[in-house]
Structure formats: C-alpha cells, structure tokens
Image (cartoon, rainbow, N blue to C red; front, top):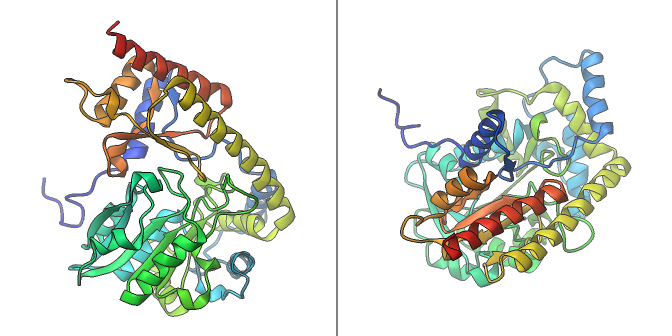
Length: 400
C-alpha cells in the first residue's frame, strides 16, 4: 500500500506502544507492573474536575476561539507573569489539545524542507517525528553523561550548520529527569540568539521539581535581552494530573502566535471546551492549585528518593541519572547484555515476558543501552518492580 511522504517514515509513539502491550498482557491475566506510562497516578484535583463538570452542566460545550477562551489565556499569562517577574501578554498564549499539539504547531510553523533542528538527547520520543512531519531534519545532540546528558553550547557547536533553524530542549527532561539551571539556560539562549536559531523549550514538567521549593528554572525567568526567537511549550497535563483532559499551550511573540492559531484553526480548532474551563480553575485558583501541586510534589520527591535508594541497594554499580524533576528514572542496562541480549529493547522485552515489569527501552529516546522507568506509582509497586528486576539480573549473572 502506498502512503504519502508525510507519513511513510512515521513510527507510533514507543512509550504508548509499551504501555499498550503491558495493558494487553494484564487483561490476559498476567501479573504486570506497568512503569512505562508517562502520566501521574493521581486523580485530577477535585476543584479542577468540578469546574469541568460544572461547565458541562452549564452548557459550556460549544466552540470557543481557536486560541482558547479569553479567561484561560489571561489566567495562563498571569501565571507566566508570576514565573518571569514581568508582564506577559495573553495574546501570546495559544491553548492547544495537549502539549503535543503545541509542539506540532510550533515545529510545523517554524521549520520546513531543508531545515535542520537540533534536538537535545536523550529526547522525548515525539520530537524527531514531529520534525520529520514538517519535512525538516532532526539532528540529535547528546550532552555528556557526567552532566546528566544536558547539552552545552560546546555540544551544539559540534552539530550546528548553515541549515540549523532550531533547538528543542526539555527541562525537566523526559526521560532523564535532568533540570537545566538558570545559568545553563542562559548560555543556551544566548547561543541561539547569536545565531538567529529558534529555541523551543518544553517545560511541561516544570512544577514537578525535587530540588527546592517552587518550580524548576525556565526560559521566561531569563533576562529579556538574553532571549532571541523562542517558544515556550507547557500545559496542565503533568503538573495537575490532567493528561486525559488534553490541555497544553504555547507562549511566544504575538506575530508567531497568530500563525499557530491559523494553523490550529485548520486542524482541530479549539481544545475541548469543558477541558478549558477545568484548566481555567487550575491556573486561576492559585491557593487551591498550590495545595494540589505541593501534595503531589511531595509524593514525587519521596518516590524519587526511593528509586535512587533502591538502585543503590539492589542494582549497585548500575549507572543512572539522579532525577531532579519529572517522575522518571533513566538507567543503563548495557552491563546486562550478552550474546543473546544486545540492546535495551531486547532486555525490556525479556523483562516484561519473564518478570512482568514494563519499562521503556532507550531506543525511544535515542540510546538503546538505557531504559526509562516511571515512578508515578505507589511505593509498594515500585519496590516490587525493583525486586523483580534485581531477581532477573542476578539470576542471569549466576546463570540459574
């Protein structure tokens, strides 16, 4: 069957594929621990869910402006103003159907055939494919493992060409949990500004931060003169446990947002109207939001400490990145390879079939010697998963 060049090289999301297989095995009666999914295990906070259901009861189920209901755009801009310490323009906000559409809008609008887009790696699996959909070329750039794989201007200098038009970073990072400091972000922003390169910063996990109070550093916290052309990608999905509500957004110069909105008007139009009113509560009711964010944040921080301790206790010597944000543990399984198992993809498949633990192989993120574990799960589930993994690797090492 013949397909267009738009999709002939397109692959389904690897993270969704693993989660789907794990759910299928569980439905067949297998005892499966699924630590592959990239979503919080908490229910959406009640005040947000109530706002969404109230919108349905009140008949707020019709079309809205493509870029979002005005009140939500204002509320988001106010939260961004709090974040940056300076006034942000609501007209710079475009509300989208999840952060994926926010990324699609930005990538499809800004890049095209002949363009190269640098992608900080390990990367979220969707970035390269969205770039390919735009007929541009994704260029992977790995930072050093000693720097938690975070890229530096020196790393970028090795890959920049005359065709370079953009750089995509993710902080806190999926899959590593690494967080760029303000100084590191400043250096990247200045590198982009000096070359006229678009900086796309995906900060969807910004409020899931384990190294201090409040949120992780972000590009809007930089001095205005530091930033050149840029787009912020964010949303409600991760921080507010609203993955299924599908609310993301971009913030950029208003001339750019007009193009984003025009593109979106031809694809999906507005994000789901009741979801927008739910998100309005999340962004506007700051006291309730603060309580919810703190509660979930404390649980994630405790789990981060738990997975790091379990790595040290049960898998000593196995390299891993200590996550400073998000809810993922990224660790290297190359030391477990043998004549039959030569990739993380094979290792994860064997682990799922033999031990019933679902992880995502690093091939989805650019390096098939590492794996990603989500610790968005109960402590006892995480502990059981580690016991099974430990049992598997020590059994293999002993040959029994």
